[in-house]
Amino acid sequence: LYKFDDDGHGSVIAEEKLDSLEPYLGLHYPESDIPKPARKLFISNSIRVIPNAQAQAIQMIPALNPVSDRPVDLTNSILRSAANCHLEYLHNMGVGASLTISLIKDNKLWGLIACHHLSAKYVSYELRKACEFLGRVIF
Image 1 (cartoon, one colour):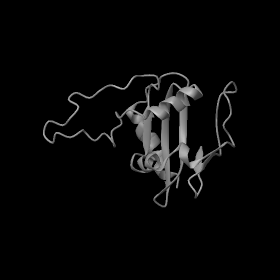
Image 2 (cartoon, one colour):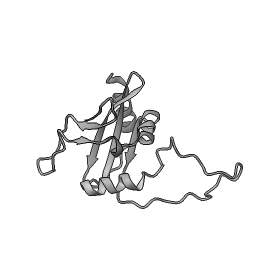
Image 3 (cartoon, rainbow, N blue to C red):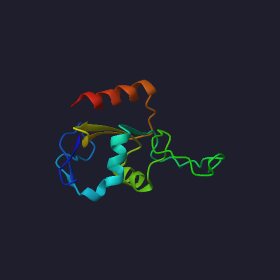
Image 4 (cartoon, rainbow, N blue to C red):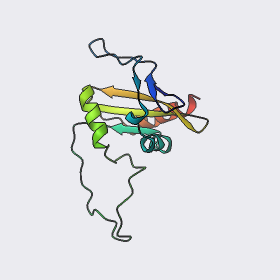
C-alpha cells in the first residue's frame, strides 16, 4: 500500500509478500518517482493492469486515425502500453505482472494498492472490475 504525502512524495505503509522477496515497507520515494502526469492518469484510470511486464509494445495499425489523421488517444485504454521507465522499474524489482488500484479521497489521489506477480499473469475482466470497485469504496 503506497500513500502519497501532501508534497507528492510517497511511502509504502503496508505490504503483504512472500518471505523470499525484498521488503519495501517503510521505504520513502521522491515525488519524481511518480510524476504529476502519471498521478493524474491514476485519477482518471482507477485501475491499471500490466499482464506481462516483459512483453514488447505492439504498434497500432494504422498509426493515425484515418478520419482525423491524428494519433489515436489511448489514455483511457486498458490496452495502452506502459511507459518504458515504469517497465524498467518493474523489471528491476523482478516483477512479471502488475495490477495497480487507485485510492481516491476527496477527489485527490490518496495512494495506490500495487499488486505484483513474479511472472506474467492475466487478470480477468471480472476480477479487474472487483478491484476497481474495492478502490472506490475504501474511502
